[in-house]
Length: 333
Image (cartoon, rainbow, N blue to C red):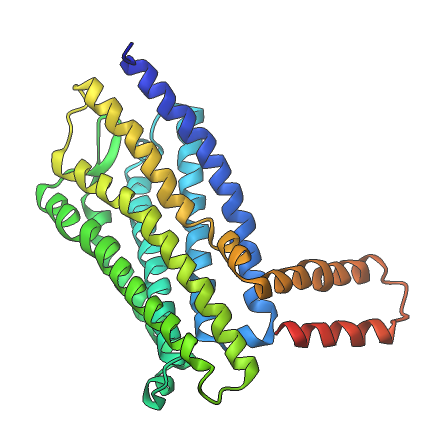
């Protein structure tokens, strides 16, 4: 027996509610730990790839927070939050575009940097600098900000929907923004350079590279490669679905078709936002060294600081424990 329109909408709403909460919790935990780990170890502090991963984590956190509160408003008020305020309608569109492009740019720069830093050519390795990383991230933010302006200008409220209705802007979104700027371009860049970096790392053993640097390059390259695989798998369905929506512009009066597209959109959106939440869990899965670093940060560093804060009256310090912690930190880094 075929599902009715109300049943399809009900399934879509229930799935969105459950997936939104799960993804938001995963994102808060995972991205926060990523930031803590990449900012706690000396080996990561002046590393360009780690800087890119920190920026991506921040962009993902901000984007998923917006997405979570948008959906929370829908659940509590029964309507799109953007439909209640034209200012928020425009700002929301701008923020999402900025976060998406900054996150995609960061992972693209990360794969390119891993290729450069692991290259056997000295000239390419010289291009991998922290100064260049700051310049590229600044340029990416400015570019994302400029890209967000048309979305803010052309986003409008019609009925109970806050979206872009202008035909010229719709054509730009469906023919360039989704398929190229946030689709094919980052997928191609990350795929190509992550594979090239992986090839370079496999050849590092043949070159005279310090073992600490070799381990760091191998760790980051493996983490970035699995991150790119997840990016491709989880982003392509959402981008394809958004292109179809903007091209076809389904009339909401066609309830059955609109309900089916809404259900498909719920699934693809959850895949896309899951992409913003699972970096930490991928890193923990593929890198034993990263697991040790997480354990050290969570159990050693912050627990020790918590104990010191709770026991301020006890000024005695165990020198052997501090020495052991320092040795462990050095081995992990």
